[in-house]
Amino acid sequence: MAEPIAALRFCAWCPNLCRSAWPESGAQREAATPSALSALALMLAEKRVRPDASVSAALGDTAMAEACRPACPYGYDIPAAVAAVAGADHAG
Amino acid sequence: MLPMLAAQAAPGADQALVSALAGMVGAGNVLADFPDRLAASRDRAPIATFAFRDGLVPGVLPRAVVRPGSREEVARVLAWANANDVPVIPYGAGSGVLGGAIPLGGEIALDLKRLNRLVAINATDGLATVEAGMNGGRFEAAVEAEGFTCGHLPQSLHMSTVGGWLACRGAGQNSTRYGKIEDMVVGLCAVLADGTEVEVRPAARRSTGPSLRDVFVGCEGTLGVITEATLRIWKRPEAELPLVLSFPDIAAGLEAGRRILQAELRPSVFRLYDETETVPRVKELADFGKGRVLAILVFSGIERLAALERDLAGEIAAALGARAEGDAPYRHWLAHRFESYSPPWQASGHFMDTCEVTGAWSALVEMYSRMREAILDLCPAAHFGAHWSHAYPEGACQYMTVRLPPMPRAEGLALHARAWDLLQTLTVVMGGSIAHHHGAGLLRGPWMAAELGAGGAAMLQRIKDALDPGNILNPGKLGLRPRASAARVMGEG
Ligand SMILES: Cc1cc2nc3c(=O)[nH]c(=O)nc-3n(C[C@H](O)[C@H](O)[C@H](O)COP(=O)(O)OP(=O)(O)OC[C@H]3O[C@@H](n4cnc5c(N)ncnc54)[C@H](O)[C@@H]3O)c2cc1C
Ligand code: SF4
Image (cartoon, rainbow over all chains, first blue to last red; front, side, top):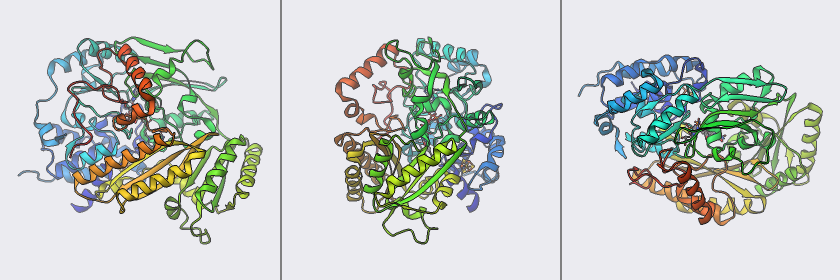
């Protein structure tokens, strides 16, 4: 899990400089930007937010992060990092 | 400042508010789930990052995120909010770095990114009309496809909206030639707090009293919501010719900048780096003299004219001890000009921030050395680096990076606040402006009275009170009066 967490920790503080890769035809939902997803996944991994239905739904919406992936100059695969955290057991 | 867990556990948005807003913008455009509210609770102000990385909400969560799809919907939402005493924060792409988009108490976030159309390009008059929520990078790509450039190319080009550029009174990296955003706006549409729609019709210039346009340009959402802008655009330059120089010291570099600008030369890019910022940029230049400082200038436009300007500037600089250097620093800057340097530092627990101020040529050398000394006295382990960009005949922007090492949160926040106080107070003492292009947002509120003077600050508050008597539009920003319920964001331990 160390590698996905490192990616999320970087991306969470990155100002979404890949966001222009998402076409204007699809309205940008702030919570679906790579950086917002990364922050949420990181907070979940660090147990700073609870894994409720809205959190799971948000982490499952990686279409924008996927569209932005090729535009990430740092080479991160944020959808994969988010999926790794979203799929982990957060009980306890 | 609330732990995220507590914010998540608190009751969500109230259903009456959600249904009322859904009636205006459609149910799918009222987002009231925790992740949507959390995402809109921060912008890129480092104080927000310092909170987030410790699992804290910087201010409060907005009650909901509302996404209007037209100017009429913006007007409807504002009229309703005004009548129901619900505060509203316009939200572009959240790339602001002064906390302007951080909710402080009871706000809804008005996310403008559905207003994302390029309305028209008028190639004859050199104008583009664009909705406020359009992404900056996509706007530039669209005008480039027609053979133009918008000329406003901030480092945050791809992570900001056009409306955010106007709202924060921003400046792009090519501002020395093309001007700052206020020089480019020839018309706009906005909505006032009570839902009144205002149009400043595009015109090259007018002489009909104070400029209404300037009520909105720089208002950071406190006086109105900008929904559309008509901007001056330029033919894409035939040539962009770099001039990479080294100077014996920053005094010589700044003097060259002054002489170049006062000789009426207009580089599209003017960047002079102090020694700290020079070192990492000249690694590839084997014979770059130790202690010398780097300058990158670019001249653009018609090739013959640009070449002449470049040569004249080179002569002015040479007389001050400048040496021509290889192009590698220019190419590196060009490749990375729209990226951010802060994520690795924020991820590793540093307290990193930037502060851009305006100084007169006659003050800049001393301003730099006093500020550097003040920061290193405050924290000897801090990183302090600066560069000068956005040059004018009268002075330039001094852009500083201050990076405090990882330390306990309370200590880091206290030092961070003290660093800001030192930089902003020294700026005023030395006759400069506390903000060159990032705006004032929340963080700069405490120095707004010193910036504007007591009379000026009172006048701004009276304008606010007249236009927004209910104080619903982005309350508590720009040093304006907060609402009684406002959360405390700065100065907490
Ligand atoms: C890495 C980085 C580099 C940057 N480089 C530059 C630079 O080179 N030049 C520069 O000028 N800035 C720069 N900025 C700052 C920032 O990108 C700009 O201020 C930008 O214009 C903000 O646009 P936004 O759409 O993200 O606005 P937001 O952050 O969403 O909002 C900023 C403020 O404006 C208000 N607002 C937003 N849209 C509207 C609207 N339509 N009507 C009324 N009010 C509105 C908000 O309420 C808020 O107070 C940089 C930021 C980052 C993170
Ligand atoms: S995916 Fe890359 S560019 Fe996009 S926000 Fe994350 S780190 Fe930044």
